[in-house]
Length: 347
Image (tube, rainbow, N blue to C red; front, top):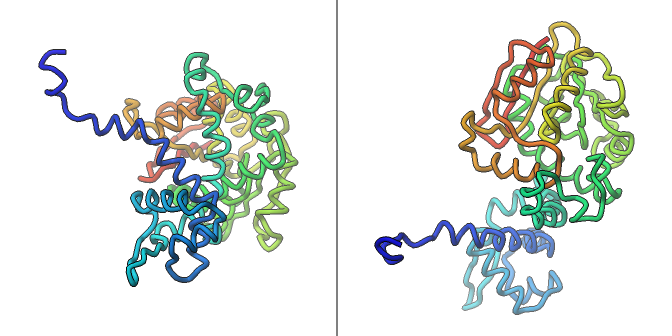
């Protein structure tokens, strides 16, 4: 190499990327062992010995885990009478404890136990151009959601993942446009109902019906949506196989990125035909920049779609093309500045 390796900058970023999985697994393990929950419930900083005993782990292993969490700014340390004590940082208290209303712990568990296992086969996914559920879990994936919902436990974990996402990101996307003219809303693939809850909070005059598979509806009723939510209803069905009821607005949140362009147009066309005149469809996804240059989160999500689904992340222009092909007009794209963005098409 011209100039010799001593002339090349130290590869800090490459080394950080190489070791990125160590960061993820440290976070996953601390959550799974309940480190942040223990510290939150203690009401005071705890010593190494108290944490090790509380999570049922070895002293040596716990010491190393707490040191790494401190280095990642997930824990604070305090020294009292020569003894090091540990407490949660503000963000850990808010997002990494099960008791928090905006907890990400369920999302983290799903990432650790499902997504992480699929990504072990990323090389195969890139070579083959298809998802890796069969290799990761021994489940054939001709029917995508039969693979995703391969057991009741796995279905609940996925629903908890979606619930935690929309508890944090939901309000930003449902207020990206003024949806107050749409009083009858169907959330297609509405899952846990977290986005429906954000809709009825933001728009007091609307009602939202969660349209999803019968077993998802059953679980949502039992675990996520109480009978007190009078403006949230349910409709059992498969949005590809069953008729869509008439509505003012259809929401497709993190749905189209699961599917090919052809299947996306198929679903959007069904929504267009069922939609009332003057109504519309709201597509919520992590949008790529028009030249594909970023954001990095959306680029990585698109790889995740390759590993887990039939779809991909798209640009605003690509979603506009799909909506136009399905009949929708006056399409608007609104970036939120957060992970998820919104695209609104009108009939």
